[in-house]
Length: 252
Image 1 (cartoon, rainbow, N blue to C red):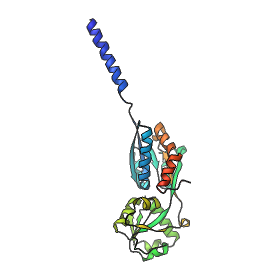
Image 2 (image 1 turned 180 degrees about the vertical axis):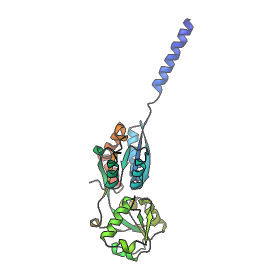
Image 3 (image 1 turned 90 degrees about the vertical axis):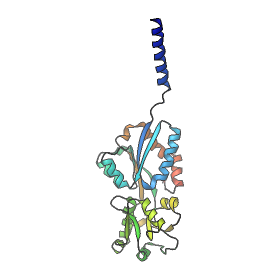
């Protein structure tokens, strides 16, 4: 009986030690972010995770409208970062994000890129180009900003048969890089990070379109996760803002 009692005590001790040795389960944070934020968010998430090893990030990048629809259809997201205010407002109306947690992360600029030989120094020169890539205005904020600029410049009807629709702003950049289009409307950050065969031909005048704004917010699920809130706070820190600036984003 004594031996049996000792074995039982030893077993319980070993189980206790094993439980103490087991690492705490990491909290998973799912980020849905605009495609133009991909490189910056990847670096920022890595920097945050280095300081918080109990956090694991899952990231989904794409057109802001497509991401918002995915969240509406039940996709597991904790943080949403859009390239315009429209899709954050859309999810707020659907009561799928925490409206009190909405904050502006950064701003951007719209530019037109193409091969160095392309002669285009302003909006009027677009009339001389054959194929122009633009994000689909139905779901891609970069396309919405570009279409807004084209309408204000009085060029939308004249160019409608030359526009090549892309699924997101990164695809616009890819089309231009490959020479599949004569030029493309993209963000300044995309041009800075991805251009190798193209260059910025001109910056779209700001008076032609609404300011490119990146609002971020926790979803209802994310609002209940402490680390999601901590990451959103980190994104507004001087360290994170400096990293965003290095990618070409505007933070004020």
